[in-house]
Length: 369
Image (cartoon, rainbow, N blue to C red; front, side, top):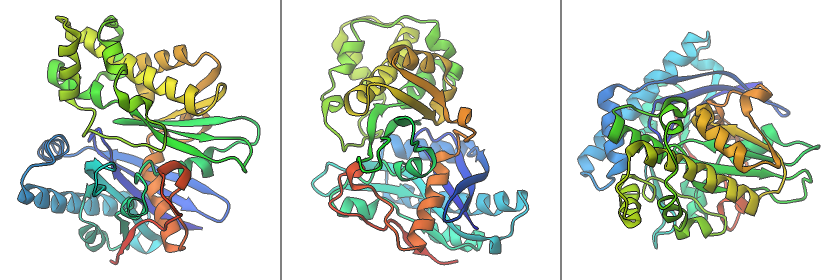
């Protein structure tokens, strides 16, 4: 048995997710997982960078160093809290914080910060990072990367499954029963990101807890079709997206097109319906007509959003990963622990049918302790 630590700061920038994962030839088991909130100052800087990646090089560099130091300190504290020492951990797999994701650019790239050299130096553990670049260099989107762990943990011989991660962006992994059939995975569009930015902008809350605000409003029938008319939703997989596309300006632009004077609560209700509708439509169109839909990520805690997804997928059984005994907050962090394991064993971490890469690639770079 080998122990790895995976860490990620997701699109929602709500904290650092850490997972300690035990990996053997037959099993991948999440042993411990926590989310550590950022200080207000660090969170503000990260949000500023993710919403405006054109900020100064100095600000980018300082945030890269500061986040790396924070991750290194939290990894050391995390393993100590649960009774492990640095010698027990084979490696840290760190995703970092995405500040810009441009897979369709002429010079395609995806930029994550969180200095891995500092993580290794502070934690005293070899660190693997920069997981997206090799896939992009091979013609892929560099995302999503979680399907390789979804396949290992969730695949069933009895039922077709779609594993959904609702973070800032929603992504899906289709796991057919027959292992000869290809795995399909892609981003479906907004998850929590539009809900969070609108809630922060209008209600001075970080997010709409359990969808309480949205559940009290009404869907704006003139606005929702404007959102759904976005050509991005009709692009066939493989595809990925981020805050570069789905952001506060995106909401304001479409709100102006609708020509309505809108109530902020009703806009939030409509944005929640947008997430549910775009996700459900993608599952029906590109995955399967029935089967199980397993929801991971913070979006599974939004009761109103979950109700809307169930409503739109009447032929599917919708459940959370927690119902299967798997911590829905830890899947993404665990993925990067698993990718670190694959890197050290010289095994591919991408799935070309998911990312669109022209070959299998070992993902990541090593930063020795």
